[in-house]
Length: 303
Image (cartoon, rainbow, N blue to C red; front, side, top):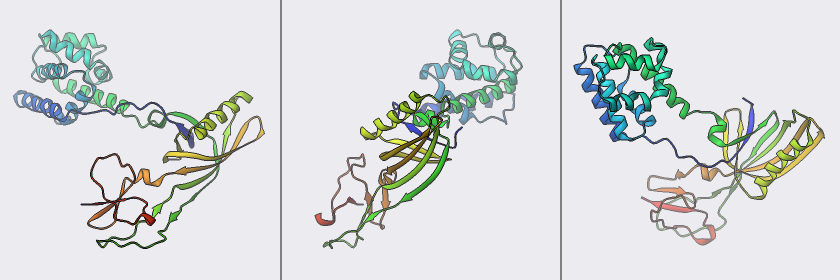
């Protein structure tokens, strides 16, 4: 992974959602199976298993039948119901495959045959299934920066990085009916970046492609994400960009980006009775401006 990079926005994907009501129901079914089982299951968390099954499951119907199948295994019983068998082995095949080593089987077919005859070791199966489920969930919730933020333009060297913070103070006093401090506007943070991007193949078209991509983001005022190490700056606008090409193997970029601090701080507590809110915060609650128009820079929400 490169030390720093730009990320260009991609289409938003729906975040993983958990049906907490169904997850609680699945967990309770596991707990019921545990009480009737002669096995000890000390190394697994039924809450975690239920949550991961819910994340990876398709329909509530399939999840309930799959839990029924696992309950049969926990009690050493054969799974003779075809719907139960298919719901478990078809819906959760990736997790079961990842847990094969812990269950002692060479294939899902072997495991499925053992489930049909009730010969699976319940403790080993549940441990393997639990670890497999968690591995699949982890891959779905990967922290890979490109997966999260979009297409990556690697930055090979950061020569200079500095920040300029601005704060516009109110110029005129205002009569207020309540004792609230003035709120000044926290301007966008100016990020001055000097970076070097290697042109590994020494092809001029690659240099042009990179510059055109960043240039189009600047012209269209589309936000980019800047990462330096593990520091992430989302919603940056490219204000100025000066490319310097001294040789075919490298681009030097002198850039000025604006990072809107207000967008990252949805609200800032002023005192016990009020809150500073950014414009268009995305909710429909009624708001009231308590500042005179001469110094208006935001809104105050009174609790």
